[in-house]
Image (cartoon, rainbow, N blue to C red; front, side, top):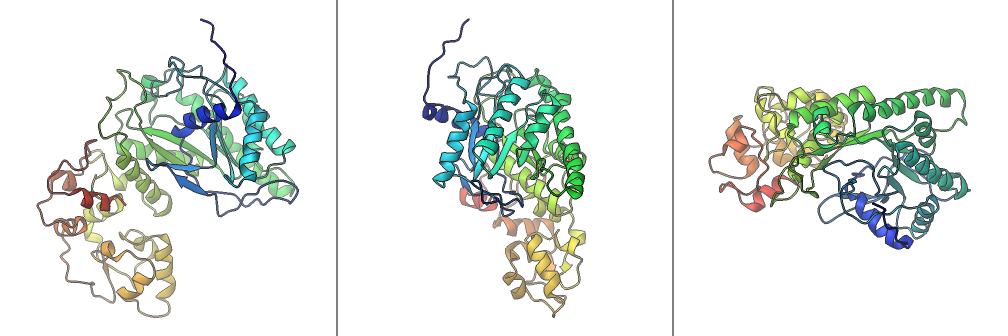
Length: 442
């Protein structure tokens, strides 16, 4: 059947292709130490990029668009799948450049996030993306931040050329396991997705050597690479998902793994039924918290979850939950504990742990000192001593501490003590009010 082509203005295309891009997660704040040279427009700073947040809590950054919502693939979870009857359109490289430059001049954006459906073939699409970035950098002289999605299946040379024009590149893992891909995205394979990841990783290592030898050598993906997984479309547990993320960090030197709560935009018997509660955003939140523990707090996936308890506690953040299951390690004496152990105390973050280590060289710390350093005492007080004393008389007992953390005197339900996870309403249990649960997720 011949497709009817309709002429659209650039503004009409922007409405369609910016809306189609909202399912690509781009809440990254990692700029690079590359300033503009004064001859072009824009620069990148290590401090990162400006962000805003959508009404549903998703982070929006940059000018975030698809190059095209045309796609030859028929992934069951995707609104742009080939079998869907949606309005299709594509930008030209010139239109993307015009939008980026004009939005930047108006101070609406600090950079570009460019993803795409697969138009005709991976190579054809990647060539268009390369043409867009080349024009933006070389013709428009844009020196701001660019995050671009690599298309799995495209030639290595095309990906390499794009990598020299982008600051960050990402390849979507799509789903946590190969079985999930087979079920929901049969046209895609784990091998095709991991191949460009490995290519970017190896080329980044080579490029570091080139830069050391030649000062003027071009930079290849200087802000690193990331990936994205859809959470909740397939039945993997949090334990499986976290192990996949940990493996990606170790094997591919990824900067970030993004977790995207499954949004039911299509009806398909292979997909979970639509829920009145909407996407599992709290589960996504718990995975981000655990991911932070992997990257900055020295935790391993096997410490946070296991095959017996494979899903995160709905009511407690992963760090608190771990501490409650390992009370034999507490309380910690704040004036003597090693930095790595301080990081495992609920309420103590990376910055506050560093402040503690530095400040205690000058004298003995008390609880009022910890508060000034940014320690969240309402959580930490159950796990710390200062000069051998706890802040209040406290029982080192799981049920007692958990009830105090949850601010309830009622008997705790199994969903708290047993670490079960159900994708249901947060307020099904009568022992918890809506305000109590919302306070736990902030």
